[in-house]
Image (cartoon, rainbow, N blue to C red; front, side, top):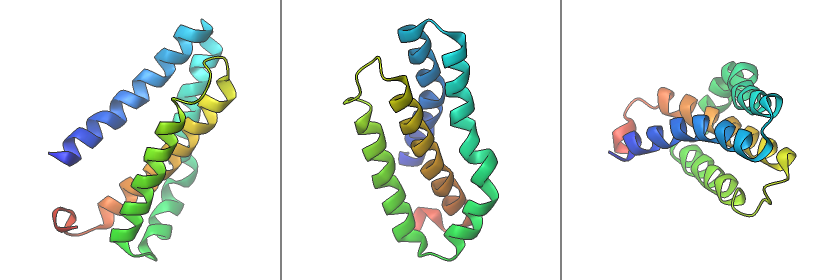
Amino acid sequence: MARMISGLGDWIFLIAMPLYIFDITKSTIATGSMFIIQMLPRLLFGSIAGTFVDKRNKKWTLVIVDVVRAVALALLFLVPSGQLWAFLVIAFIQNLVGTLFIKNRQGYPNFNRV
């Protein structure tokens, strides 16, 4: 159940952030930039992430990555709405560590027993 809720939250974040950026900027370029920033970590680091997590303790990697994701999302509440660069950086970090989480979860043979 927790994995389903987490996955749903990831998809909502993927859609909600560009919509929020469009709402505050009314700029399609800024909205497109958010979509690009959210996809770049998976495109650039997806294959490297698998190698990285294979050499680490899977359980602790999951825990650390989840903490970093939570901190990144909490920072969104501290950013003033006019700071587009901060939203882009936070979205990039969240998706970068999210890529590590996904690769780690895929490589964990018995994820339900973590």
